[in-house]
Length: 270
Image 1 (spheres, rainbow, N blue to C red):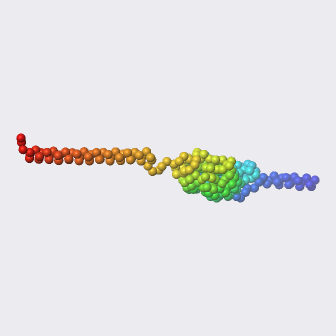
Image 2 (cartoon, helix red, strand yellow):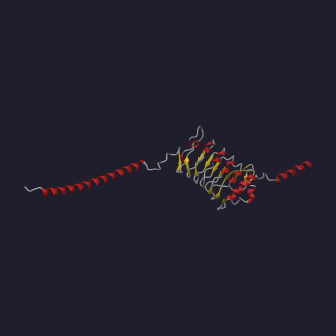
Image 3 (cartoon, rainbow, N blue to C red):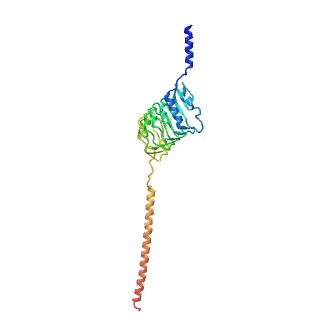
């Protein structure tokens, strides 16, 4: 009897406890992210202080856009929410994060190099924002990355060579930015069975060049323009020369006429 009573009390006590406790790293990650974002459409209305302190219960999430796995933030999908602000470097605290999608918003500022600490990250989609500065080469430390999608931003500088070392990378898109310099051969001419990326991954960067993009057009005068200028200048020279000859002939003719008049006056009549 005593044993049954203790068993019942134990079950009641365990039922009173939460199924899982919040990870302090996830809490810091989400609180700082919420502070770095502006939410004009109130899409993140349930990102309250209490929910951010305990966002997961097993596989259940209490906040919009988050997916949980065993009490940890596993995926953040906050795409197309008209969010403004910047990407918090404290996202790196969500160490169990495997997919981050902040695409189709109005986010500004740089891509934090601290994202390198998301060692489990497989999908990074920051496309269609207003992100600036260079692509951090530290992303190469995220060895599990399958997807890097950064198209339609305002990114500058060169594409880091190191990104070509990501052997799991199967999707790579940096089109429509302000990138410059050569396309790394580690991305354009990948060896073996590694996925290769075609020109559509790089379009829309006027100062970016190299395979698989078509050769850049001559920024100086084109051959046609040079030939045209040559022909034009030749024609001008010809016209000027012809005009000069005509003037010389006219002057010469007048002199001859004048000389003939003088001679006719000196010649006697017969």
